Image (tube, rainbow, N blue to C red; front, side, top):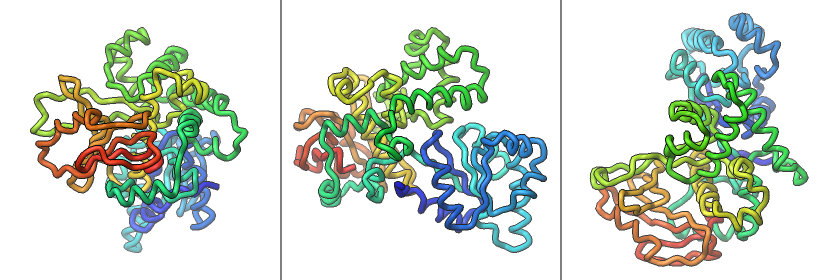
Length: 410
């Protein structure tokens, strides 16, 4: 079994909040994590994937919660939003009677939109929200997924613990990071993702919106996967999918709610506000799913593909984000692009210090490859160490406080 770093954040939440909500895409490991906590901490467990239990929770939420007493884990709670008001009442009663209501309920769900609607209406202030990502590469290799450090000495230490060859990197990108794929080396990733997409469209998308053309929605996902790491231009996607822009916006909101994709905002500061591009960039939260949808079947195809740079960039951004999420740290991640096409792949504001990052699939880089970094030299924030994260096997200096570092250091 792979140890999940985010577990400590869940246990921390149980000490202070009556309700802990774990969200994330399907099959990122929410249920497995809850089963561990159930065995260790004495929680009861119920899943609303069971139609009979779901019907009871919808029809009579008071009776359902009377029969299934806290401390209780409710899996896929978005299927029965009427539970939220009753849970609020139980939590309030416990606080009034005992003065302590911590650790009463763990709720999980994969459709953030329905969950957030219920939370904001019924449980605001009583719930801790934990967003669970797929596995990180460090978790796969049995390391604690510590937050990425910008200290060059700590980065050097991380590279000694784990190294990844280029061929292995491409294999990892194509396979992706869903836990099911690491229970057995014989698990076929193509079969897994085929079933995953079908199940996602049937169970999540179709129950959220009135989806009339499922094949067109899958085509939309396939086109979007080929654009991972690129700016989001609604009209261009609409033309390719042959629907209107409003439909694209609606469908994108569904993928965002299901934690399938992530939008990276453009960096915005007074010193650059007049010249920046204002569109977000789109990333798939799992490279394996994106590769499947983009019809990249193996590492050889990826290594010779036009999409190679995009998928390496997506991998790097995802791993950096996981290191923050798994440690309960808010991520202030952006990108920079101006009207003269100067671009910085990733701008991270961390502790009031700005760090600039280029994501590359090659090995050797020089000052000309980071010339866009100068665009933020007049930032109101202190500029800290910045990096080209690439396939180099060792750290080397590019310029003052700018280093090339191995992908294995994240």
